Length: 249
Image (cartoon, rainbow, N blue to C red; front, side):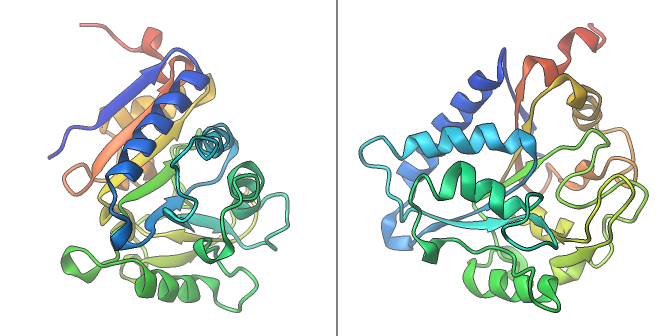
């Protein structure tokens, strides 16, 4: 089992800076001959600050706008211009201002009759497979909800339902409006690296559950991300880390 790395900085800006530093390292190490690096994005308010930091990287000489192919680990089934769209958030914060060419942007086709099945086809066709034939994202970015959810895997339901499909539909809940499309644990854990973005004191309880790994995944779905299968890095500010609330040895 690989140890989970907890990257804690005093402020959100500090967490974003470290995220960008590591992202730049990964992109520098990637061979352009291998094509664009597939990276799956998340949504939510936390992600915006990280994407804005990422956008600023393109102002540096040498960062290639053709270096990354963008995907989404989950999406609400709404039009792409809907204010709740994860795609729209990334488009506004990162993709449009950084002038990312359209051919490198692979959003969930929410306008189609079965967007989950269609997106699974797109991912299977375009993302190189790893062990077991499952597409392997070099970096897969996830958020963490106050309730412990990640992607669109919510508490109270079997997070492994439809796992073999790799991408499936998730029903709306009272706390999470809109039906959704989500990566399943099988696809998430096939990634080479999973990066969690976690900020704000309201996330401290969920972050602690993720750190302690004692709850069942049906209660804290973020625990489906398995450190025995993928390298996990969590980027937090001090408020989300909640160090003052954790017991000390």
